[in-house]
Structure formats: C-alpha cells, structure tokens
Image (tube, rainbow, N blue to C red; front, side, top):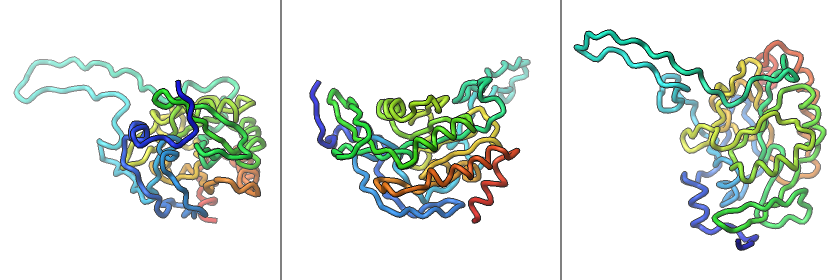
Length: 277
C-alpha cells in the first residue's frame, strides 16, 4: 500500500460520494438553529458525514418511496382468482438496535452524532490533533486528524450514567469506528450505527429513529444537522456545529438539561420547551 496525506483524488471522491454535492443552506429545524460558520466541505464532507441540505422537507406520511416497510406486505387475491390464499406470516421486524440490556433497562435512549457534534476531522494536518487515524481508501492510506470538542469527555461519561447511548453517524464505518474506539474510553456507546443504517432522502442521509426498536417517546437525538433528524424533529436536541473553537462550552452546558430530561416520563414536553426557549 502507498501512504499519502494529500486530499483524495476526484476518482476516489466519486467512489465515496455517490450522490451529487450539496451546498449548505439555512437550517430547516423547529428550533431554528443558527450555524455560526460555513465549512469547506470537499472530500471531507463526502467521506466523514452526510452532505447537509438544511432546506430539506419532511417526507409525506403516505409516501412509500421514502420509508419502505421493514417487511414486505402479504399478497392477496388476483382479479378473477377465486382460489383460497393462505396468508404467510410476516417475519418479525428487524430493528437497528439489539434488545435493551439489563444495565440499561428503564433508561431513555440517546442517539449521538459524531462529526461537528463531538469531534472535527480533517485530511489536512492539524498541529493540536487529539487523534490521528489512518484510513485506507482504494489501496492508499490517508491520515485523518481528529480534534475533540471541549468537555466531550465529561459529557460522554455523564450521558453513559444517565442513558442508553448510541453513536449514530452518517460517516463511513472505516473512519468512524476507529475514531469511536479512541473517543469512547469508557464504553458509553452500547451500539454504533453508520452510513448504511441511514435512509437516503432527497440528497441527505437521514437517521430514522423509528427503526431503532425503541419507544419514540423515550428517544432523543443530539445532532448538529437538522437534515439528519428531519423525520423526527420533535425528538431532537440541536447543537451548534463545532470545528476548532477551544472555548466552546455547549456540551458542558447541556449536562444539567440532560440530567433533568432523564427523570421525565417522556421526552416531548421538555424538548418542546427547549425548542421554544
């Protein structure tokens, strides 16, 4: 294998990015989250995370092309066919998460994003990088430089005490999995979900919370991208996109809020107050 630290070629980018590149727009979120910075996406956006179009519309409830059923529906009688049809039982729905463990029984489930929520990564060298992760792309090793968001350690440790925590990222597993290994030293994440677990909807990788296998009234998603939770905005705790501001305190400031949320019967009333504050 060859070793390289330069940006990926156009051919490599095309393989990692099957969809067309989208520009960032204004966030379409119930909480009207404002993004402080515009980012230079390029190959990094196609490799690490979803290309975010913040003007995404929510899918109509009757649209079959957006959310295919977990199992196929049984067939019925054909026109003019009078033969009796014995229905075939449908297999059980396969959810993204395994059954809740005894350790997490009774806890709410918090789905946490990775890029620009907990960390920021770049193919370009960063002098103060917390991690350097080698990633193979088409036979070439690329070094990925990762910065941890301030107070991410305290945030993850407390979240692991209060909730069943799941990492859900639209990035590729070959990058996100080793980053999670280095980031989560305490085993906070009970499961890790990557790009293949997302629903591709109108140019965005959407995290469909209904496929987790958890009661939606007890699920929260923490994400900097409104397009990622467009199917379930009422379950979201929006955060500002983070790149390199080492004075940022957002994760630390959220801990008291989540401590209160962990004691609620369901998440909607408290999240509604958050979005309308």
